[in-house]
Length: 237
Image (tube, rainbow, N blue to C red):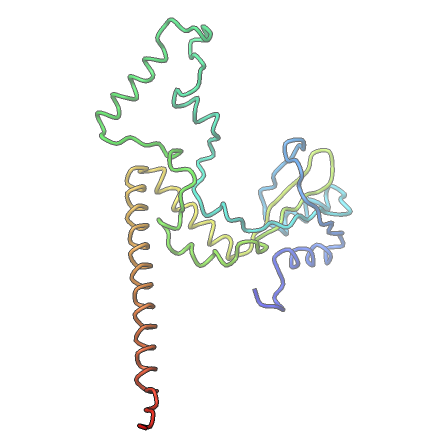
């Protein structure tokens, strides 16, 4: 970001001030304990709604581009994943830990038959944590922006918080790439994994070739330097 360029947070705060409202910078500590109503309009409409609610100020939380946004997230946590894949100790028939009905065996058999039928069987959540830029190389240019302000979360104070998130244009473009890469994984996890592996191997080969070229260039430079400055001959006695 240029030194004199305002961040999205600065621009939004300035706009709020012009609307005779006080922008109050805040940080979210625990989202789960707050009742929130998400606003569906744009910034101008949000300000109008805030005024209609007799708001005198607006909480402004600056949002930043985080490194983990470059990696796939299915939205399924570890506990859900284990439950979905029959790796937990729960019984689907609710007959307790000493299950006698064989429902767990049925679940495993079903998965096994599907694997045998399809050859390779993956769910999108199996690819959690993989680098999305392997599917969308255009994402790499945004890595320099990690830690940069990418948007703001605005909240009208009250019992039921009215909230909206406003993002910079460049972040919207980045988010679109994330969505596209995620859709590729969700539509065909196996194909996506193969494409990612191929892209990774290609990147490794290119990096190795670049390293060899750099070493060769350094070596050639050293040879030229020696040739240009040969050692002086010593006078014979």
